[in-house]
Image (cartoon, rainbow, N blue to C red; front, side):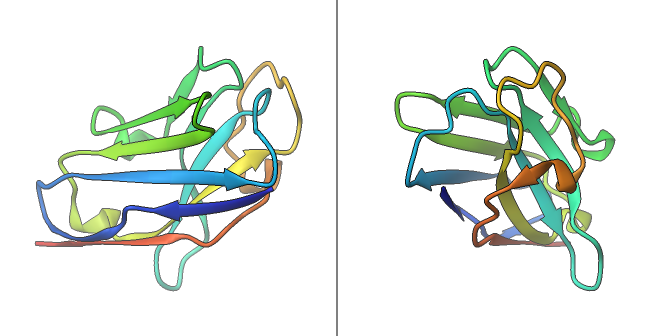
Length: 126
């Protein structure tokens, strides 16, 4: 599976962006999908995950109430709606697929995910 994140850009603090993740090669039905981000000089970190059936959504504490992850099974897409953006949200954002199908409890560690594709840069200015 090849994943491609898109929708990044430059925005002022308080603004919004919607990131999209498209998969090619096969469907990711049955797999949790996650968003991660990597700021310059820092490790890749968890942002949000949606379970394989869409029933569970987990977020990193700093984005709770501001970001929303969703998925469209028909389009084989995953989205990250980002509102009230802050300068500290600046990073390259990546989407990834859980390595385990039908995992009961979604994970947040980058090591539990694979098929990393090209990320999309989000820059938030103050």
